[in-house]
Length: 132
Image (cartoon, rainbow, N blue to C red; front, side, top):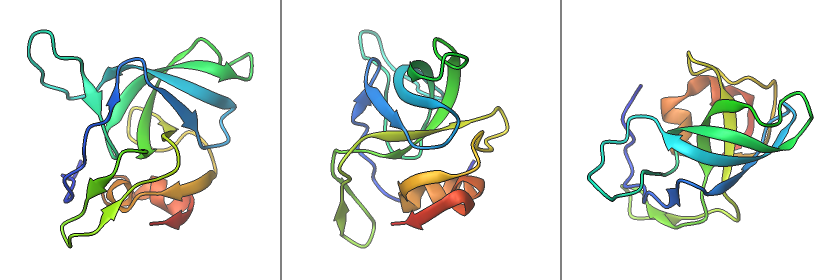
């Protein structure tokens, strides 16, 4: 997995709710873990755009509800800075479900995907309508 070029603020903690922006049947996710987070004592794991998280499906189709899945965060509300000096933020927090190899589980992504995600997960970027 490639490193992120931007200084992404890690704004999503454990317990944060995300919109699932693909067509897998999940509607709302809750973060229960962050893959690769190296923390300290009493510091909650946190994630930002382009990070892989472990989630629990809270709302969606009955066959996928209450399942533990992996997802990659594609948008966050908190503003972050790119290397060229621009600052970017999105209207919601959203994620896309992925499998163990990093390929998306759905066949389409409804909303905009951040450029940082497209750099790390090229398969997610190919399904996206817009990359911003």
